[in-house]
Amino acid sequence: MVTSHQRPLTAWVTTALLAAGCAAAGAWAVPAWQEAQDLKEASVAPTIAVSPVAGGSADAGTPLDSAALSTELDGVLDSLDQGVVSAQVLDAETGQSLYARDAQASRTPASNMKLLVDYALLTTAPQTRFTTSVDLNDDATLTLVAGGDTLLVPGHSDPTAVMGHAGVETLAERTIAALTEQGMSSKTLTLNLDTTVFSGNSLNPEWAQEDIDSGFISAVTPLAFFSHYSPNEDGTAASGSRPADAPAEVQQTLVDALNRLGADAGLTFTAGEQVSTPSSGRKIAAVQSATAAQQSALMMQESDNSLAETLGRNLSVATGGDGSTQGAISAVHDALASAGLPTNYTQVDLSGLSMNNQVSNELLTAITLRAVTGDTAERLTLQGLPVAGYSGTLRLATRFNDADEVGGRGVVRAKTGTLNSVLSLTGYTATESGRLLVFSVILNDLDDTEAAKNTVDRFAATLSKQ
Image 1 (spheres, rainbow, N blue to C red):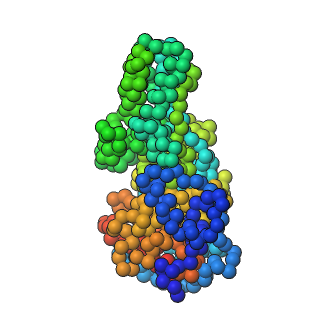
Image 2 (image 1 turned 90 degrees about the horizontal axis):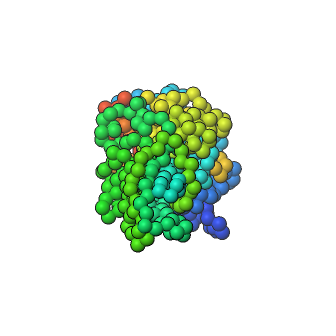
Image 3 (image 1 turned 90 degrees about the vertical axis):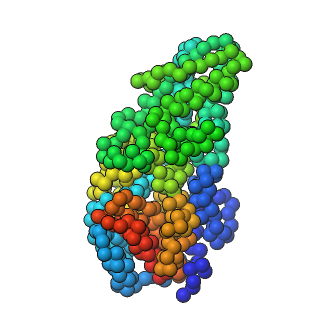
């Protein structure tokens, strides 16, 4: 058997984001994790084309002995000696279940719930962009119209970025240019705010108040900086500061920029009311977000609760819904049903923050199997899966760090999930011969989630070393 660092590159070919004109498949071993790092830094908006899966060929790796694997995996899970355990492993080449432990049971998945909205969005509206615009309603009134982009920055738009693809400074410049082009000067205008693209409660009653108070989530709105974090004075994200009113924060930042940029023309601006009906004015300026696929990849990498909720509501809007939480849940259900995936699950939010979500390992492995072996849209899901030891929520020094876990570093790609008494990990890996395996493990009713992290990492690493 080869050592892990010599492992064939079949798996990396599967996960790579394939640019036009690419040659050697092996060259994607490095870009696979570099792409994840770029998403973390929010400095690159990657192409969303995905390479074909290497399947049905002589280099697909050696099939595994299910009985021997089951004995080994049972040993890993039994060693935890706490909580309620369920898991499943699939052979990606054949779809055969190699290991199952209560895999059909409903469990609280924590942030593995994000796999559902990610899959639904990417198979429904991956190229959608969310527009933030300014309408001219009359010669004294403008309206800032939210379109679902919560990754705005105060500064200029950066076309190479995911976070900050659209910037308020750019929107202000375009607004002033439009007003001066039509000869407007020496005037005071009111900037109203329209957030009617979303409806319903901005805070889900299923969320624990302590999670809200701790900043794990805040009111879900269709307009915000830095995925519902306030900017510092220098325009960077204040990662520990959730705004009391994210849309009003953007509105005031735009007013300030308009006053600064419009001073030479004698234009002054004041913040107006939040309107209750959609603006009927004429659009005079706009900025657009990164694509839904790019935003969803960032959401998955960082397990961003607010972005998951926002993207779910944007999915609802994109499919003709009302932009509410329930509309989002219905849109996800419809997408899974249309794809022929299991729908016997319970969903009360999009982020997985609620303890009342219930899914099975069978559903999570079914989604991941589609990501590994499915069509182009389904394989977009691979962009968001963190790489063990390198990116996203698996880049932490405490993950895949023990002697019996390190074999998964750089090889396992998986979505994490953590609540006070819940731990989950769903993704895929390659064996030492290059066989692709899809897996999902969920632990509920835990007393010690730190110990449980070692267990799920060891579970995945055990697959990698086969």
